[in-house]
Length: 447
Image (cartoon, rainbow, N blue to C red; front, side, top):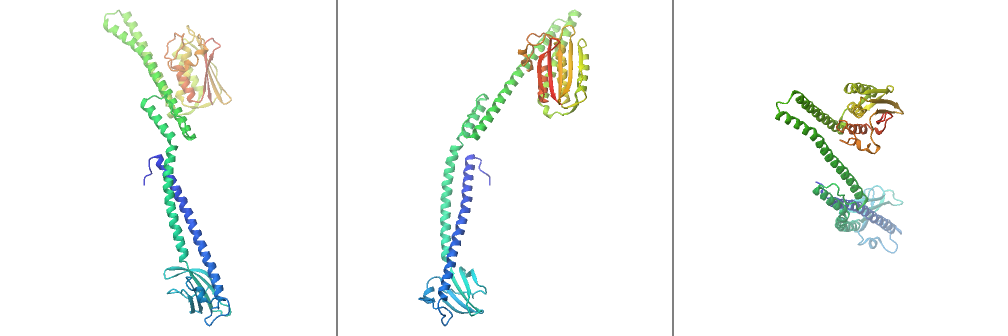
């Protein structure tokens, strides 16, 4: 059987099942108690009747004379009978004796017996002075069974009534209880229909609903921020690509319209085209690096000798920027760092290229320090350029952001890539002033 899809129906069904299970257990216990009490009353009556039957001297059939009442008057119409047996033979019976009554058992005490398909309660006693003589008093359990059946029917009727009332009450109360969820659903539908993630969902109702609404509002806020960042990133990327593409197209148009240009002018235009193409390639490489950084959780991580990585990056930077003096002033002792080697190399390469491009105009100098202390790595890259005002430091960590006064070439993605990779490696990034007069970037990574 498939469970209902409606929360209201499920809660109502749960309430009905709870009432049904509780009622079944309580009804069973009540019926058992009624039956037990009824049998206990019959047992007490059997003992009293046995004592009454045996009271006084025995008559010629072994029964007592019963004081003021004889056994016939005592047992007549009571649904009870007595019988006396010697050995295995019944010698006397009195009272409402049913057809097919069995002989008394060989053991004394109380028990339940079946006579002609009906239940009887039996009390057997051994008679004094006659070891083989037994007296058995029996009483029908029909009144007890009838009382139990009546109470069973009453419990069934009351149970059905309770289930009906419980179902109606549960349906009504759950309707009230899930109203905050209905409002939350309506709010979510409005947000989805309008595609406006800035509209908050209603935060009201029970604690669980408010907690859910708060979590959903937080998710919507993050999605809104991500959407805005994506739109801004796409707009910035389009703007950054449009400029070199426009210049490249203009150069190509000039070459096409003027096939007889002097060789010197043609060479100059080709150099400009090559520079624009290089700018586009660098921009695309930066965008690719940012995209790979977003998927860094799926990239392989390993133990990396950071000192060797920095040394190799400085060597490569010297070849890319031969006019710049790179000084690896302090090298840490041996030690490793667990991370993505490609991402860490992006950090070092972009810091070195950024320092080289924004350093002193006539060559410049870049100091690189690497140390390992208190379980952390500290990488510091400082240049001798004009520096960046402190108010612009945080802005420079965003994609396509460049210093307002800088004239150096670049895509504005270098520090954004560094910030992304440092965050992915659980590190810290700090921008400050260099002793050389320019910008100093410090990266602190867990060792």
